[in-house]
Image 1 (cartoon, rainbow, N blue to C red):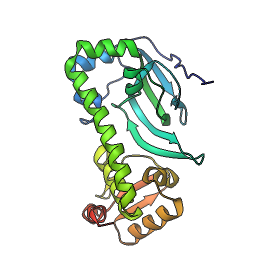
Image 2: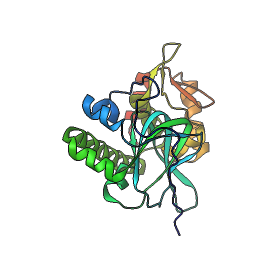
Image 3: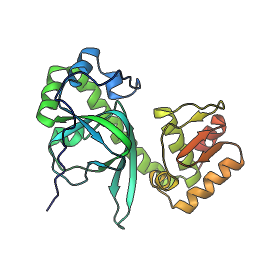
Image 4: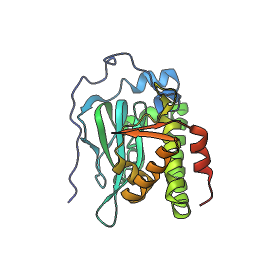
Length: 246
């Protein structure tokens, strides 16, 4: 029997945001028109998640979508051997759970907070009604769902034919494009707090193999790594590594 995860309200229904917030231009909140963004932020209830708290659980049949306002979340799925695959990273401005919210099917993956997260939890029927009122926002949500499916398909194809070194370079570049920013020493931070085991899961390779690749990239001055930190020191060299033949 499926264990249902029901969100608990930790703030007022609707109402103004607790503080001024800005979101990346590529995120859902960054892309939808101002009037639609204002309205969606008035819907649902505020919910705070502690670090490593389950936001959505794979297999659950729940009827809500989640708008991340601040913080990070990781998307994982169970594997046949009892482990997990890290499918994606989401952050403030992103929408999660929208596919199940639209088709009422069981959740395809588990979403877990990485650090503290503030979100809006919106009932699926309220979310669908919002999309009907705002065709431009509906188009943005549809395009993000399509982008997620393309990314998953591309990763499956690439991972079947590319070396681990190429996959590591491509995943780090993908994270930098989506979430990165300038680092204090002039490099580029990937902007995501990931452990090396989580990076290995995202790459789809054994941890020792990914450790070896990272060690080589550090030796060549392409990357600097630390606890939950990856910094790109030579982005052109990393792009060359990502473009290398399998």
